[in-house]
Length: 22
Image (cartoon, rainbow, N blue to C red):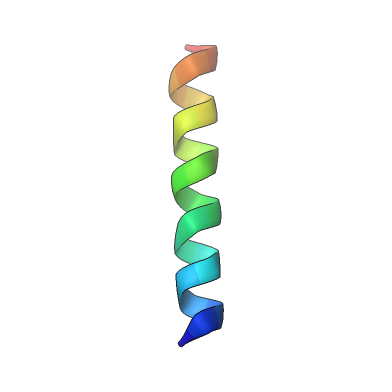
């Protein structure tokens, strides 16, 4: 379950970065 949460956080961070770049 921890792994899933970690991956979800990474995706969120990636999304935020992509939004910031755009």
